[in-house]
Amino acid sequence: MSLRSNDHQWGAVSKFLHWTIALAILGNGIFGLLMDLASSPMQKINWLALHKSIGLTVLALVLLRILWRWGDRRPRDEPAPRWQQLAAHAVHGALYVLILAIPLSGWWYNSVTGKPLQWFKLFNLPPLGAKSDPLRHFAHGVHEYLFWLLVLVLLAHVGAALKHHVFDNDNVLRRMLPFGRLRKPSPEGDRR
Image (tube, rainbow, N blue to C red; front, side, top):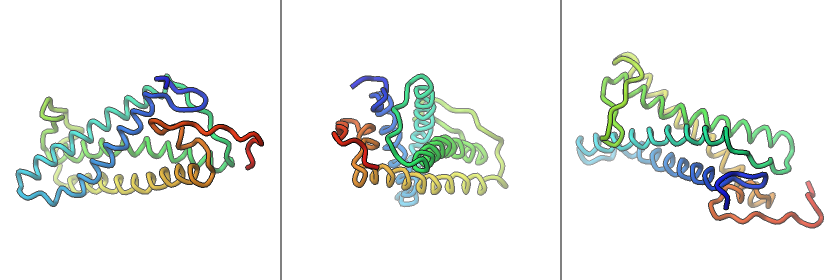
């Protein structure tokens, strides 16, 4: 498998970034929802610090992915009705916006609470705003609602990929799977 994408499938770097970001978001989202189950205040503080560090890592990885996409080619769209292609591009655009906005909103929320933000206890990041008690609940709400909006968009993304894989039997999902083999075109061509 090539490091770079080609006309038919995503390259190894794109696949690695896609699945690493996806797993980090899934794990950190679940982790964020379960933080209230911490057995002690100190454990909750440690879990929160880990949640923030993972979120910052997702932010860095998605920025890296965007930079990689600018220099990498993109596989051609699989044959599909125009509305499906437009919907796919809209969902991908929404995913990028949300995956950037969620860690940034968490960083902002952390800033308005007046707490330091560390990345895995290695270094501090500057605040994105001044401490503000009136903004604290609003910033937390923005962070949380963006997460739930991401869940809805991810359901559409995963649902569409599974629809293409199971019902359309095309390469939309296969070309992003880490070890996926592309389906050979049928001799009679596309029947859509």
